[in-house]
Amino acid sequence: MEERWSARGSAARQRILHAAAEEMVAAGDIEVAAVARRAGVSVGLPYRYFGTRSGLVSAVISDFYDRLDEAVTNRDFDGDTWYDRERARVTTWVDHLYDDPLAPVVLGRLGGDAETASIETQRLHKAIELGARNIARGQRDGDLLPDRDPELLVAAILGGVHMAVAVVLTRTPRPDRSRVAAELWAFVAGAAEAANTSGETS
Image (cartoon, rainbow, N blue to C red; front, side):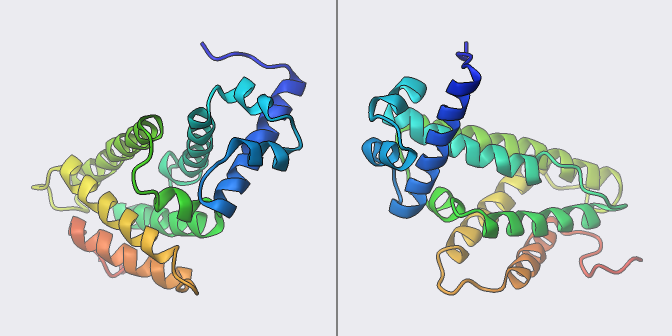
């Protein structure tokens, strides 16, 4: 059961979490003493709220995915067709990741400890589940070909776009975000074999 903190304790925990995110952006990893200095707290306080260094890293990564889920994954986009809704989702996804300084670090992580790897795997499986529902809806509506396995298809798409954006976010300078969104959408629509990939209504 998650411990409930006082308002003061919750504020301190949030300050440490914010400092840890800044430290991860700056250094590519987290060192608890550096986080404590950045947050202006004692070295022992992060351990009180997060248990271990791994717990702190996991909290930062979970917070990153919570914000991504709220902005993109769990959001219902307007549009009459699968094409309209998912193109808006891809564009919003690119914008969100371009604007989040943690994105290059989190998406570019190669491995990690068991705890953080478990979090990332759970989030991926949830994204696949939601994406498969979107594909199935597009198939029912006649926007997508009906003979594809939605779960396998969305897993392949997510893997491709994840790696593509991880590469793009590390480039200096970064490519124009609108161009990246357009190219990723062309990949997504082509992979799904959308009935309409030009954006024109039939």
